[in-house]
Length: 628
Image (cartoon, rainbow, N blue to C red; front, side):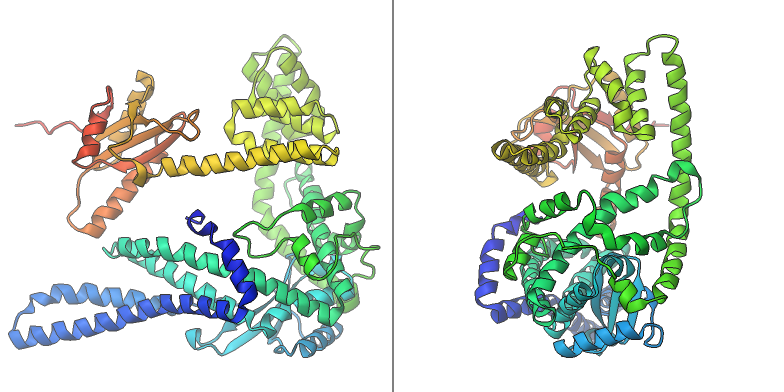
């Protein structure tokens, strides 16, 4: 859906840069269009109801009652959609008395920004900060301001850097970005609510609105993506004005490295404790308070920052890339000079930080406990199975499938390094498996050994779904090895593969299956076909089903199967559409084919004749009822 408007994004970005006010007005007009359409429909339907009632009583013709009730239901759905409630953010409320230093800093920043005082200061467990303005009276406004600061963020930044982050967030509010963001959210949520309610009520108009949203949603998203990026640059400039350009740039760099530290080091180390016991550990956020200040001094921090700086802004990103944001401040990527000591958490919250960390730790442990116990039990099961395989391997050679299973279990239980000798022996003995080649290639490249590249190549040959990840690993390794041209070739290969996937998806779209396509026999074995037919027999309402293979140009190595199903028609249009959607979903979920499966509705016409000419296409036909 997005690709239809992707080509417009560069032009929209240029226009927004040259005419920011006009561009903002366009976005507001698009948002108003959505509300205007709903309000216009409401007024039109109310007028229609009045006319029907007047005609009914004047003429004594009461058959119009069957129209009035559905129209009232439709009006109710539209009116309720306009009353979308935006919930306030969640977190631990902190009063001025509990954190006077932090509140004093907030006051300094907001006064410099001429922003509103927060009605509530919240501390949560996310690595983020935000200023949210939530309307108390819906579309009429009367906003309540919430400032949310993640304790992990405060634990990883210096006081000056947190000041820059607060100024950035207040930059959105002082520039009225926050209220525009609320407006945009309400438009998207309103239309989603309308469509959901209509589908739930099986209303015939659901298909009509779905068609409108296919045009409106990507068009509106294209305009808002560009606007949100422009807002980020505006907020960065405000942060530089209040905290200084150098501090604002340092905050951006430390935020990137700290986020990578949490994702790549801190949380993986926490979850590495899963094998040790079934209970989620306590005091996780206490540990983060003690260690977060050193995130930018981690051994991998330089690589993390380099990777972040190399990322490009994708067309649909709502935030510009780090390199673009730093360039707008006249800065370049650079690791912060030292650890964040004292951290903003220590400087602004004092001992309150520890009590907040304890509360967040308990909440995290309660939330994580179910999945923690499940993962611990899975680890025990894998360990038991691995022990059994290792014992059998000591008495004689294992079958190839069990050798593969042993390798994968060893990776899961002990890690790739321990499993590497097993992977080498498997490949040396003639084993050829995409997953094993990928794991061996990944392990070798992680050790700086270019011998992993051929294994990634083999994994991509065997499994086209492995192409994006293999190309990313290869490009990263070659870039770090100073082999930029080869790295670029892998990146282009990944981009080409992504484009091929998009073309393949378009070719396999149900709306793109026509009588003009070339259809071939499905080529599945009789046993497979009988299993699929038995599955269709269990789906209610299926009268007949044809299965063929469509000849495609994009990714021909992935067969494109087309399943055409004739279903019993329902009495009402909305009910009929709902029944077909359920049938298609059940049929697709219950059929396994070696490729992609496109499910279409079989109707009389040229497409039915084209499919019927394919030998062996009829997969299922409901038996006629026996005559008595």
